Image 1 (cartoon, rainbow, N blue to C red):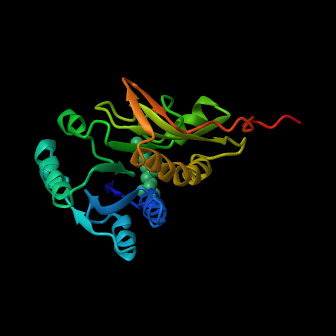
Image 2: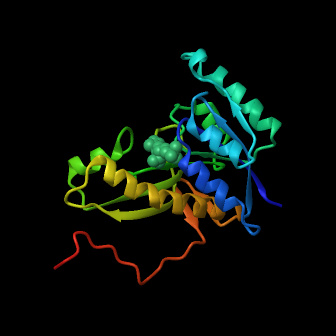
Length: 217
Ligand code: GAR
């Protein structure tokens, strides 16, 4: 049985699209049963519709600071669709500790940096300001702290001398689209075990892989 997945978005939805695309494969262990946006103007909503995926809009703005009331509405959509796993994909709304706890071990997020470096806003700009030579993306389980939690999968990219936050973010986005479906596959197929703050996986390492940046002359 395929695991039933909801994707929560706030914007353009390119990671959502990558997950929907991957889940089309017959052997993919999960199906995307609903996309929920907290913004009516999220570009990803149209993309989801085009792909034949059910959508729901639960606008967060009218709820103001009452995050619990907003989440109660989200939860009712999740119940309606009998959702088992959640993927946050550019979902820019903080969740309460209660909601996060309820979905403990069943909710993933993707963040465009090699966590625990550069959580929060504009991680590509943060990476350039720190002068790192390698950056990337992280899929992790959601815990109450923002952009933290047991790491499921990471993908690395080199940072170029002439990168701007935009060019680096675009390079990282490509790796996001690669690792998010792979991480969901791992979770949905039972290849993940949580041991406290550490995520143990059945994934193997590629012993031939090296990323050195800048490339030596
Ligand atoms: C992605 O880069 C995602 O990693 C980031 O928002 C972007 C959403 O793009 N998420 C965060 O920064 C979470 N802290 P998308 O809507 O095209 O997937």
